[in-house]
Image (cartoon, rainbow, N blue to C red; front, side, top):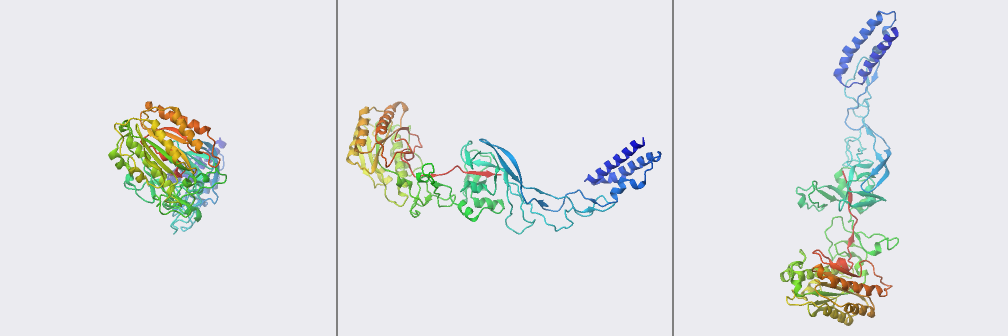
Length: 571
């Protein structure tokens, strides 16, 4: 019995004392001190007094607790962060994305508020004044600003005078990837694959930009009207039915908006501000040339199209308006004698195909030929413009290496221009008939015979022959006529490239398909030129015309810039 009472006595007092020491509720602390402890101790002492057990009054644990200085269990109440570990906390984590799963090291910052360092005096349950981890209201505390992407706190003193916050940065666990393109677009980075919406945790704020090279960041659009965002320092991301509008922004703008110091070197920051497009020349392709290095545009990110008259020394301006210090790939390619065979028969007056809209010659063409024939002229005109811009945007500005011969046909054929190398696209357009012949028949044989005669009369060993035959396909032709034309080119020294384009119904395009197939047979059997092997697009093809057809892209390689899909991490 006595032992039981002793155990109850000790356990009850310790429970109440422990509750008193840990409670942060002032009312509860007051109740335990003024009511619970005295009542419990009184009752236990009364029971013990009726027993032979001697319990000296000095043995009361409550008395011992309140008569000694003891530690405060509250957190520091001063503004700021008390402790930041000098080394980041690292842990192996597993990344699970749309396209890949891998392990990586995740880095986080250990930052905390310290417990109060002020002792509670004897006989007291709390101390006077605020809770402070040091008994000094001016003790050092870290700044409370945090990086929105990795969550790291600024490591400068609270209230620091610096305009920018500073930290070491860690894993970007608060951010996710946004990748330009379709929903299933991917980013290959350092041997890992990411998709839109994947976590940015495997990347560090202080390393991701260097990994991407020249790049853009992403940020919510700040324009009052996102549809009319015209800030020259950003590039608005056009998305249909977007709930949130975003912009591509530069590296410099991103870090300025973050409020944190840019952690990259001066040389890296200078490079990051430049355009992320690169020259598409084969000499820069490491798959074709071992050790080849990319040639990047020399203009700032988000620049307007380059002035074609302001060509970098020994460099060129690409067809899409970027400036490079390397040679123009279009001038390094083979040159062509391109024979255009354009159908202007009565069936070409059909209006199921029309000229391309929004081009410099759209109105001029549509006024006379808002029909299939106008679509043909529009496609050819855009070819001339694209090829002209590609070959003139360099140190050989003003020269065009290609020669053009234009033949129109219905039931007869007419040569509009022969082996032309100096006329502009607009000049060439003035040489062509304004519309199709309502009463004209269709004779492919007369067209190919005219091309064969022109090819023989104007043959040049410096140019490769290429036929682009545009029609609605409502005609027939014997294989022998095509074989004769193609074998004539081989006999003269070079195989003939042959492309047919249908602007009519597929049912009537059988002859166009067959012409391309015959031409390919002859091309494949011809000896290859060891000094200029064929690469890129197939030399003989059949094609169906679309409203957006770009003949220059399809048949003759144009010096366009290359770009990786833009990718950035957004918080």
